[in-house]
Image 1 (tube, rainbow, N blue to C red):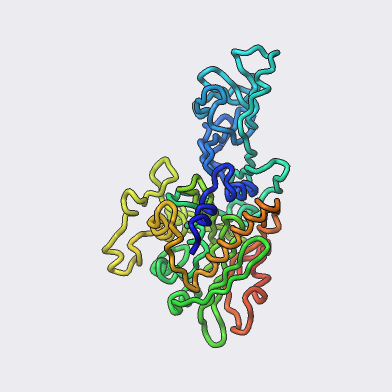
Image 2: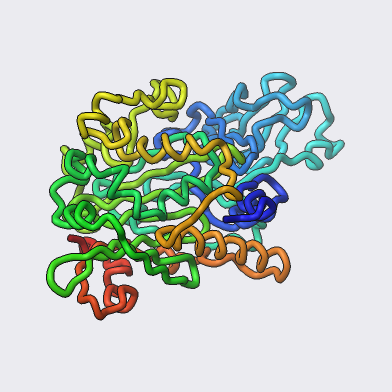
Length: 432
């Protein structure tokens, strides 16, 4: 278990907090590309790491992430008007006409003479906004420490080989991340979905999840996070290994199943009690099929259906996640909640906005979670006390894969599956 002060340290990510400063040293996903579809499109309110921001794409096709509120009287610039190209672009507050660029510079204060220099003393908080792989990413740390752009494989393959979604999850980021690391719950919570979900069913490895309900865990610490190996008995002298990478601070990739697309997540704090659950599917060796894309759009696999016009799941705590007790009793869904994504979210939200980790009783299957917490605590301490660079900010750290493999029982998974755990462009994941 964690002490209260440790739990508070890891779950608080607002400005000036130690873990918040850690997060701000990485490129984080902010918006789907389609949320800023064209120059002059509607601004998008963004809350990230407890900061209220505005994503804008002005008439000159400049993009940026700035403080949502005008420096004059605090009006939300979401109500603002873009100036035309002829007017020089930028967004203008409708209250008194103050105008800002996408990097937060004040371009005009109509009530003040230009020669006074007043506008030059005004600047909004701003962060870069860069598009890659169907996502707009931002970096919120010191500009002089900004790392190169991310190179996660799902964001580097052709667009017809990937599918990306996001949803609001109404709990702290860390209990969502811990669910992404925990491979032992699959044999229980998702057992029926392995047989019915079109993005999971049919994989030969599924049988091992169902026949061995007591996986053994071996966790390897890396320079950038962890490799969490869940080992189950297989035929003859082999083990079935499902290997999950965790990269600092909030990236996980689900081990593959057969030739299905590979799934993964980012768990990005909105504030201390809510997070964005980013979900991606991709196949490194082929385009996604129409049936696969349709299933994802229909909320299958790790994706969800939405309340219309929002990114809030249609199944949510206000309607008890549309839980079906009859389906639970009949064995169609073990928890009574439909969909792998919402099966996870419903239980993680049930822990409360911020789980009280001083009350938990962990077992050997939680080794990955324990080591993840220790690694985060160490990274925060090293950065705060020694000024050390956070682990895994450089692109080489992103060139990692998950794997599902059969290995001889006398071989250690990290060594035997080393090639399978690194990106091999154009080649499918190692999968059973």
